Image (cartoon, rainbow, N blue to C red):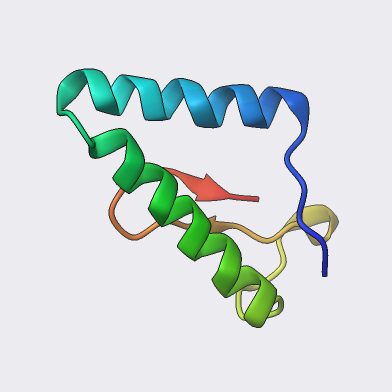
Length: 69
C-alpha cells in the first residue's frame, strides 16, 4: 500500500509542525514522529478503522488533535 499526501495536506502538515515548534522546541518533531507512527499503523492495518461516507477512514492521532484521512 502506498500512502501519499496531496499538496495541501503536506502544506498543512508542515505548518502544524512549525506551530508546535514555536510553542516548544522539538514539539514539531514529536508531531511528525506521531504522524509517521500513524502512517505505519495504517499500512499495517488498513481496515482497522470503520469506513465513513465514500469509503474514507479517519485515523485519529494519539497525542495531537489531528487525524489522517
